[in-house]
Figure 1 (cartoon, rainbow, N blue to C red):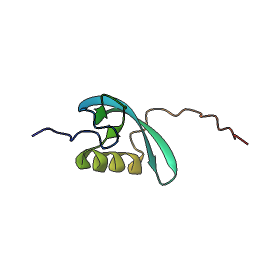
Figure 2 (figure 1 turned 90 degrees about the horizontal axis):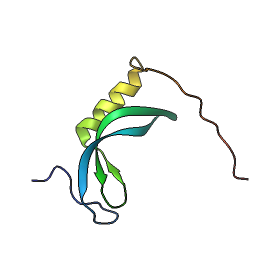
Figure 3 (figure 1 turned 180 degrees about the horizontal axis):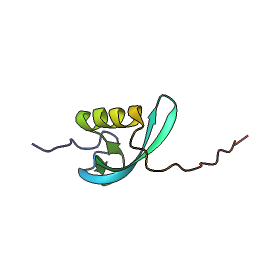
Figure 4 (figure 1 turned 135 degrees about the vertical axis):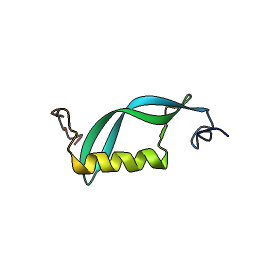
Length: 78
């Protein structure tokens, strides 16, 4: 059995990789490094296994493991 199904958007093959992931939790943006995600080799869509998603939520909800913070500029298109 394959760890991931094919991509639901384009039908491409999905391969597991360690990636940097933007993760939103209660309106806050966290950048989490070295996350095992499934990545579509055609369109780049990312997929999380349920166990990984639960670990991410636990990680960011405690905020005990924050390594560094960065300032992100916000602009308006209007």
